[in-house]
Image (cartoon, rainbow, N blue to C red; front, side):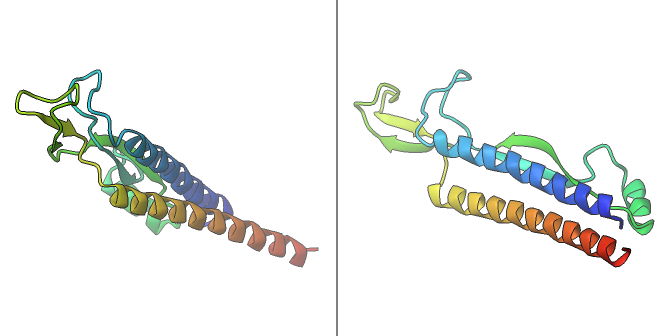
Length: 145
């Protein structure tokens, strides 16, 4: 793997984690949203990652890896969580049904915070990898003087 492959891999990881942090932030911002333009409560979203992206064949990725290349991570989709909404009894709420229950997004605050922390740590790890690659190249250039 050369210097540029290392940078490309770390940069793709940073980009993917940035998208993940944005999706998690959207989930947190909509934790109490009971009405969306599509109808019903907000649905929690999640990011799907893949090595090399969805259009890369396994053979191509394996050959690139064996040749010493890198396999960047890519976001291949953002999917809605399929868990049913939470029902809360609140007959005074404007979105309550005839029985007095309100459908709330099935978003767990603690789970989202853990996911956000994980995404932040992954982003920071990629920043550290870029700094380490840069430092190695600088040392190599100093040796060559």
